[in-house]
Length: 379
Image (tube, rainbow, N blue to C red; front, side, top):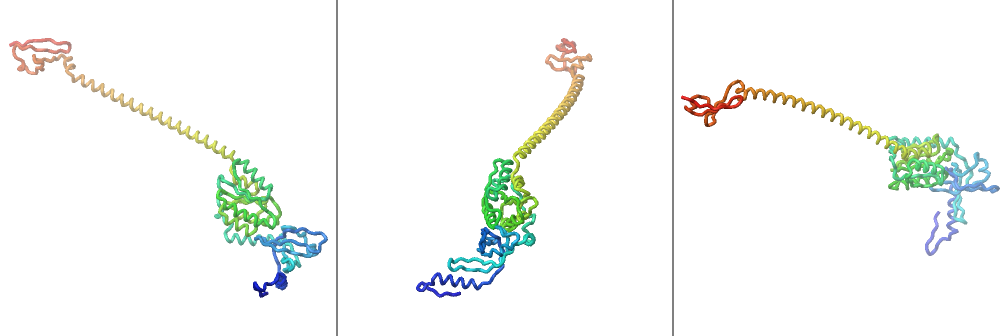
């Protein structure tokens, strides 16, 4: 399709619209895979309309289908349903709108969905996205908890109530988004990316209540799973009930069985921690008391031993002194005098050891054991 135009010779809108319609009319029919959105069955209408959304990104096409074709579906067509559509594009020139004219619509059965999930699980596992060494530990007490949940959902209330019951001052950064249907993938993925960028959000909980396999399909979507794997903040998955196992559970750093379990795993119990602190305090007191008793006992033993050593040494010293006193007493002049000896001093007070030292008629001083007397040398 090529139209010649210029500012001087512009092409009318009708010409462009008809050219587009002619070009699109030459395109053939094609099988498309997507999710049904914005569908409400109009009783008595020959044609029914719905939006076919891409399962991974925010893209959609309008679809018109003969009501008779939908009447053959079992189960009936509903919003959020995964379908295959055989359709041909059609451009309505008068309004400039593009739609797909469906010739056949097929619902994707549960078996096909499970097979697709198994294929995707094997692919992501082979890339290492579920490896245990990628799992990050949760913080002991997060500064702020990111919470992704349905709008005013029971799952949100369960998480908030149980977390605040355990640690009343815990803070949350909440994103209430669609957790089911065609918009769930983009909404949850955007919330993940947004919370991962919040600096004081230390852990992110993604939660919703239980549902059918089809209801939980968004949480096995490849785009969402890869977005979770790319987050730097630890993620806790609490999707559905314990028996449910969407792929988000496998890539998350922790899988909680229920929203209540998620709250218990993310926030510590103030009562339990207080009891633990009290127990540690009591144990520390017991250990310290035992240590002090042991040290006092050791000191008592040391003092008793030191006293025994000192007394023993004093006794030995006293004995030595007694022996020394006896020896001194034996060797002292007084002891000699006691044995009948005397000490003779000349008139100068010097001890006389030789008679030649004493001149005739000299006065002598004689000291005895008891008393003293004087004498004079004659001749």
